[in-house]
Image 1 (cartoon, rainbow, N blue to C red):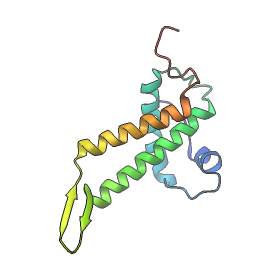
Image 2: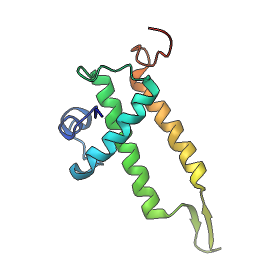
Image 3: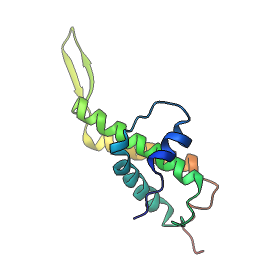
Length: 124
């Protein structure tokens, strides 16, 4: 399977001096997950030998989202809000969290890939 962006591209081109949200040891995993998601939305319209920069940027942004989502789940265990004085806790269902993640992923894919022809699902 082709991974659309590597850690060097992530740090040099995508971040442009910002602090990395994904550690080097974890990036290949999240980038592979992001690449598979992109491949599904583009119906494999991407030439694995010549990956456009917009696809690499999209991959980096989705990889960051996946990493942050995993960290959020690990740290909060589904907790969406908490009150101290009245002692109240609210939990978010895994379905609601996944729906929000799917929506955000779609927004990122459209942000980077709309107008490129890569999202075309018709006969080529």
